[in-house]
Image (cartoon, rainbow, N blue to C red; front, side, top):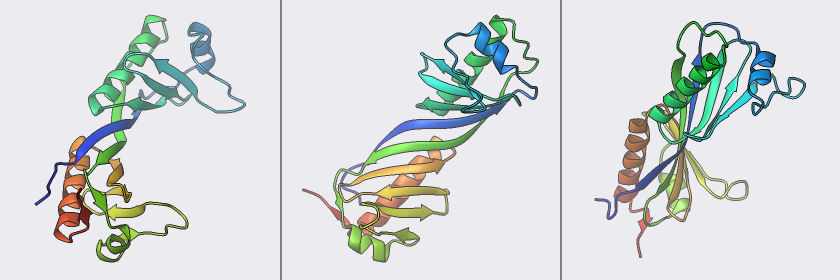
Length: 186
């Protein structure tokens, strides 16, 4: 059994959203001077919100991408807030945004070190090329996530669609590392 419980911190939730109508980004930029919009450089406008601290990319098609939140709920709240702020400034938006969580990125500490060389040979769907990258890349099937494993016992998990995906993946991997005696504790 694991000696310590992994410490999981969600560091970024990426959500896509749509309002099923087009947006006039020049008009939005005009009404919100803080919005960044340089169509020559990037086709979207960047709408930053202080609380929750996020950035939402707005596209002419009515599609949006929100980054920077620390939870699924916070991502949904940030998108809703952007839509409300647009409406407050008389930007007509007929429907509320439909939000889909695309990716949850987490930072994890297993509380011990990992034998990467041995793990590369014994953990399925893993790749370890220390000359290219210092961590082992582990592709999990269920849930479908990618976990970067470092010798320090630190992990980065990406690709989860829910916080539950992240916790299931991390706990499953931790149990596997324990069973294969790949963890070193001081």
